[in-house]
Amino acid sequence: AQSVAQPEDQVNVAEGNPLTVKCTYSVSGNPYLFWYVQYPNRGLQFLLKYITGDNLVKGSYGFEAEFNKSQTSFHLKKPSALVSDSALYFCAVRVHNNNDMRFGAGTRLTVKP
Amino acid sequence: EAEVAQSPRYKITEKSQAVAFWCDPISGHATLYWYRQILGQGPELLVQFQDESVVDDSQLPKDRFSAERLKGVDSTLKIQPAELGDSAMYLCASTPGDEETQYFGPGTRLLVL
Image (cartoon, rainbow over all chains, first blue to last red; front, side, top):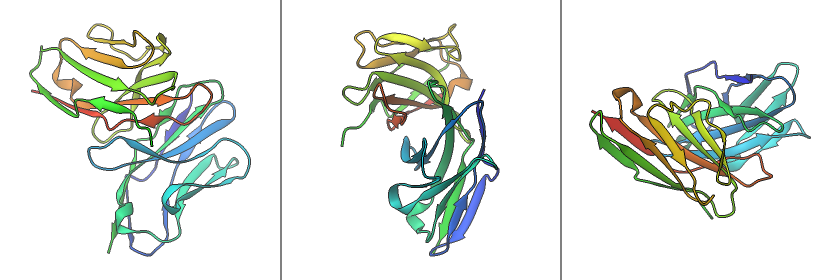
């Protein structure tokens, strides 16, 4: 069965600095990888996904993520963080022809002015 | 932009009472999911529907939880009787038949006293 690890419970960055939120995965087969963001008392909002093709995926709000097959990672990045990026970020994985989506435990990102 | 609708947004109930949550997926989305998200954790799948049929309910505590999607459109998740440990956010998501991305509703936050 597939699984996702988000090794950092909390990431703190200063506004304007680059940010990275880490994600590693384990699957049997080719992974479909996703990042979602959750604001307080809200559902999850889709940011970006990797299905196939270019390893660098660009998504909403200036976020991007790089699929690294050898390291089984899919880290979320943004060149310049905003205070409004402060939220809970979830990485998720599933495999082709299997709707079983597994989510990580989440990483709380705090961007300080 | 079309969204997944959920109601109520918040529900407080006493243990042993019955509660019900409603979800209306994005129009035309054949697949519907119910997730439970305990505070500090990622969402965990409870049940998946394809049209009106249950595809996966292996993680649904069937002694107290039930879900239906009678006409293959909106869905109801019921808990009877509610227990203290059921306090969580209940999220509904949907996908079109041929897409990988799950689109989430705002969730129902349940507090069982």
